Length: 398
Image (tube, rainbow, N blue to C red; front, side, top):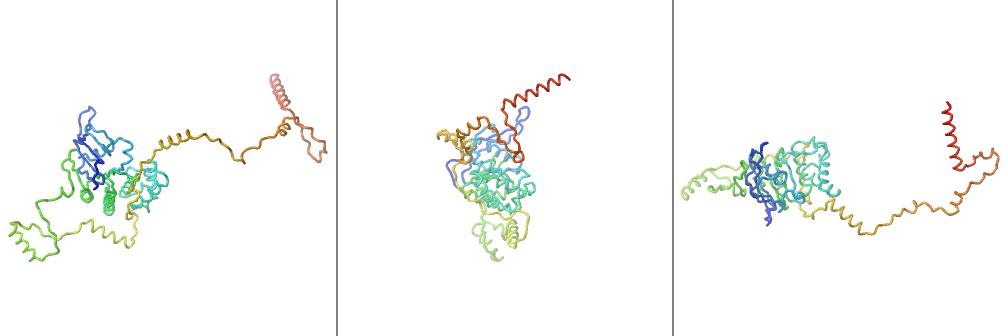
């Protein structure tokens, strides 16, 4: 964990009460919640269903307004637009467009953050590789399993390279392989300086990745502290050695009883976790190149997640800057290419067109077809008008 003078997230006396139609207090979802999360820290938000975890996350994101208390994200209110650009969010349910494939989904979210095309394409490739979906990138999201949907959901939460990452049940629906990969990613992101708020019902996952946790019940904080501090059993001492014989264990029992006046409570052989056994079996199958239609092994974290960039210029700022540049520069004179400029008619050509056409020369009809004599425009107009008048008189006579 990297400590920072200004907390990434700070809440003081945060309270949210849901009321009924008559404005009577119905549910006190969050009551006097005090949190302080620093840069590079993985903070766990724990509690059973209905304890206020989701409500607290919505308050932090500015999706709900508190009835009392204060929230500061990067020292600003959560409704600040520039603050939202620095946050990545994976909701409990991944509400993604089912008709888009994985690549189109990430492209859509990249466009929302106004990312340049080349930057967007590079990030999409790296994120798909990171979550192990590069081989399934052309499948529609509607065809994904829940675990694969969670993977692409995590990728979209990282498309903007957020400084503060909020994960609500990130391992829900994932198999043990995906669960381990997500936990490893969370630890690596924390090492890169990302701040992560993790909400989960799977306590084993929280224990593996979180630095500190707070436990909620009934909307109130019941306990908060570091994982090692909360889980330590101060009244017990644990000793691990290589396998001992029964005679040695008996002598150890007698020695402890004589020196300390206490009893040796338990002597057992340590065992692996079921998760470790499962992953070992799967790893062996992958080494034999056994085919699978699911997600592949996750890749390394993209390099762009560990870089610090200047805030991106918004579209409006770009347009204003371009407009000011045009006003300052002299207005250019538009010129067409030389090939497109029609030649200026000479004086002789204009006079020839305005003059009365000459009489055609008399030649035998067999040599050249007879041409009608050009008539003046006035004569043509007069003949048309006379024809229309004659036709009108004839219609009246009938």
